[in-house]
Length: 390
Image (tube, rainbow, N blue to C red; front, side):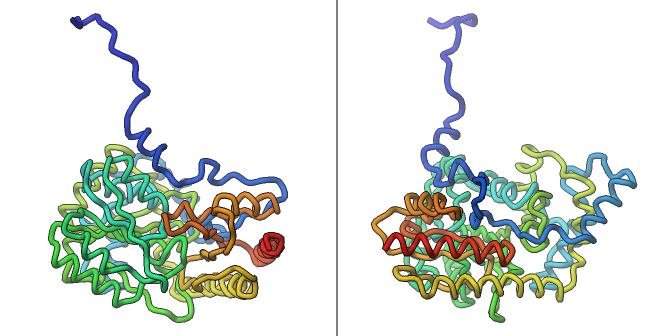
């Protein structure tokens, strides 16, 4: 019989950690580099944060903006994002629908913790960003992988079959790792699917919404007015404004859901940095011309990747339509992990396709968010390795 003084059995800690470790596809060495290697592995703009944004931060610091911000974030920044969203997507948006977060990752985690229960089924079209499945594992939710069609579009028939017993769909658009932009028709079929299943939520990760190519159109989930109450959109300042290290993101959701997400976020993270939120106000003033110039720069590098890879035997790829990734498939007896190791040994770092879902096996991910000279040299090493593989 146990008494108040009986020692409790020692445990290794939360089962959430074990669930993440056992199911995660993400590399444990993420971000590590080798001397002399060229990294085409990281999704980080090479340009550095624009000077006006940095200057806004240093000005805020110099003026004493170093104290705690309101727990829910800067009202000025919430209002600015709401105004920006309304103008861009024609979706009337209130400040109360904006949750400011410690980067897009914290926004995704807070959303899932706030709205998903253990055992809930989550539909994840893939290949896609690997962090979603880790968040599901943390919660104890069940991931249902839904492979995209051969042309990169959503398998809406499968999503429809699974929808009645699912709680959430998580959509990355434009896509990481594929660079695909889902067509307008896919988004509107999703809208109908949500209407047919009122208990289903759509979490749209639109971190790369400002980076599209060839004059193509991007349809935001925020424009799906008929299913507005079921849609949560997560974004970040990291990619559009080259602010990866600043760690600032935001979630847009109906007020009731936003309040729940904010409760989780503030409980885990506390308030955001005051001067970083001040700098974000300046980021939102970036002109459309500057954003288009940045996208054009990525398209130039996309074109280099497509040209390099198109002539390589045993390599096939859907051309990226946005973001700054390419996801070639390599005809080889090696696994994606083994291919990644071979490329690393040849001095070029890429990501294993299997990280991004079951259908990513046989692929690798290349990031072209790097200067042209380094990209060209990295691709030269990549091509030489492909030829050695025969």
